[in-house]
Image 1: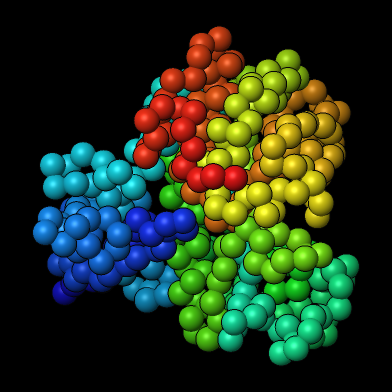
Image 2 (image 1 turned 60 degrees about the horizontal axis):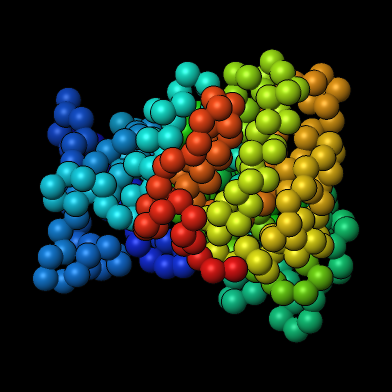
Length: 353
């Protein structure tokens, strides 16, 4: 007897990487091991030297196939078994290992938008739906499109054993959110990527596509973010630590923003519950700030912060690794030193805003 292992990885497509997967038949009693793929077809290698390596880093039950079948999330490596230049998980892992003693933890709110036939699901062929207002956490009628997909995706995440914490309809019609956490890096990134892959696969069954674009529809419509909640052992015990991490984030504003997802300048405009991408602010219960301090945290004088700047299309490995490097180094009284993949030094930008 054998089982199916779906190997999943992140490719090298720019400016927004795609998720890829393929199936391997594995004999019973054997664990999934390293595999390979054609990197010339995924923007990760030239044709004359196309082999890339898939190294399993996270496995879970396959909720779509069921049985003994599994999902296998992989890091991409070169054939000498060093991290591929597109492998941002290696950067995240390095950041966590450096500051593991501080117990950095994350919860991520992943927003997304359903599309069908080139427009948001349920939108009229000509013109626009009713203005924003009734959709956020709404119920009933034609306005709450896509709920059947959300319900099936949520159950798939539960069946896979992911740390899904909830779901809700978002401010724009056809826009939804699921939350994963609370987990340390890089595990939080692993589960966000698997949750995204499952969402794509479930949506296929409904002839619907999923967009993680930062501003899927221009104009007076909300963008899509991935609000990133962060804590450490110190912030869970001290208000002073919360102030320290907020002030530290204010010293590397553009470096963070330039690595928080493609098209961020179209979303972080100062409108639609955002702060301008080139300005930094933090405050309690302020959804127009770069960093929001939840009211319960302000009251208790300890807890976590919410970085509201990351896009829906952000790389969770990059974002969490960068936050750990910035905040944990400040708490330790040292300088951040990690170099982000694809950058010569820490201040180089992956994207231009």
